[in-house]
Image 1 (tube, rainbow, N blue to C red):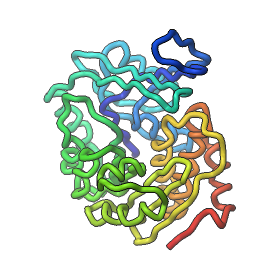
Image 2: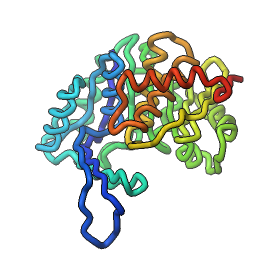
Image 3: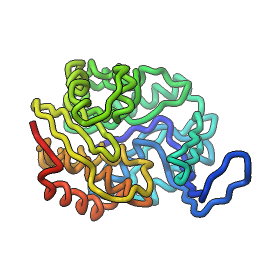
Image 4: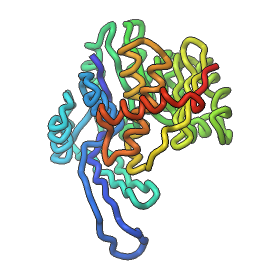
Length: 310
């Protein structure tokens, strides 16, 4: 079974505003409300690809109930912990203002509720896959992902970590199967400037030396780089297309990669599936469908001069 952990899910209010301006009343051209959070995005893309998953995390109040209702309506299996106090957050995504987002902080989570989560995850066993994705509520310890992985290590579970800064790097001692920083996050970790796919390679290698098995670095329109567990480096430019909504594109890439890996246990196939899923979601109003993903996948496989393997 695949499990996705979203400790700080949200109700995403996604709006398009033509010619957005500060200091005046702006009116929406289109709007959409969706269950949000990196783990929930992963679950949705996996579901679109025919892979069952269970979304785990915290929800609070009426907003939390709406997150669960909308997630289940999309076909996502959920097993959330309901907080005794507080309200889940609402995030505002402005599609037409250069990807501007206003994200809420999230509710308070008690030590007892943290222990409930750990008890729930303690049921995982060999062959399970666990995604640890995104930010955490301010009240949750910054080493929570590491704590979860230490609790479950040596059980044959595949860990995927998609987080920023220390929340990510602290987990490397537990040898996550996949980490998926974007190139800006890579710059933040190593305090460098990355301009090209070639620039990514030495720093992806360093993350492997620190403990990661596979390092998948997304670079938006520049494509992606994989430092694979077998020692190879695979690079690809992104498929050509018009970016419509980049919210969830990185999560789609992680989901696509793992869908590809679980189906064939082949790094090249997994990489192309990841890039295809990320690009297809960026070209779509919402997270990509199976048909959209495979359309981009075929483009990548056919474009010989856009990819290289070392």
